Figure 1 (cartoon, rainbow, N blue to C red):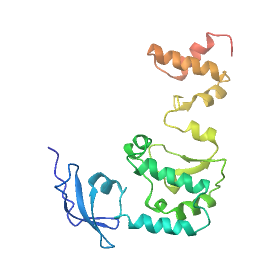
Figure 2 (figure 1 turned 30 degrees about the vertical axis):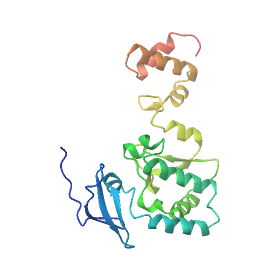
Figure 3 (figure 1 turned 90 degrees about the horizontal axis):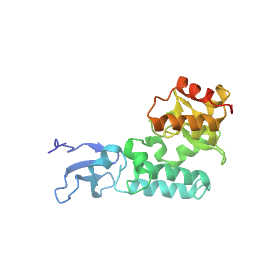
Length: 210
C-alpha cells in the first residue's frame, strides 16, 4: 500500500481539496472551485497542475481567445493547443513523451494571450518551430525559442549523438560524409562497441569514401 497523501484544505489553482473521493477506483479528491462548483478531480491532475479549476477557467480563456487578435484558428493558436494537449491530456498519443515524463507548460502560458505576446516578441514565423533548449525541461519563456527545423531536429531527445554532438554536426567538424558517419554509428551500436569520437574516426578512416 502506498503512503496516504492528505490534501485536505490544500489549494490547487482555483480548487480547494475537501475530501478523498472513496467512490472512485482511481485516487481522486472532491474539490470546491472558487466559482462554487464541486467536482471530483484525479490526484495526478491536481499535483501536476493539469487541472486548476472545475472547467470554468478554460471556458473563460476560450471565450477571451475567441475575441482577441483574430487568432483562434491561426497556426500559432493551433501550436499552443498542441503543446497543452501533449503535456496535459493523458489521452493524447504524445503524452507519454511529454506530460508522462514530467514536461509541463508554465502557468503563464496556459493563457494564449501570454504565449502570443512572447511569440511575437521573440521572432515567431510560420516557417519556424518552437524548440525547447533543454529537452528535459518544460515549455516556458526561458527554455523556448523559435528556431529553424534543422536546429529543432538536432535538439530532439531521439537525435543520435557522438560525445554530445549530433551526427550531422560531427560530420561537418571532422570533414566526413554524413552517410559514412551515420553508417559507422549504427555499426558500432550493432556490435555493442562504445560510440565515441575515437571509434567513429577509426572506423571511418578504414574506408576511402571521405
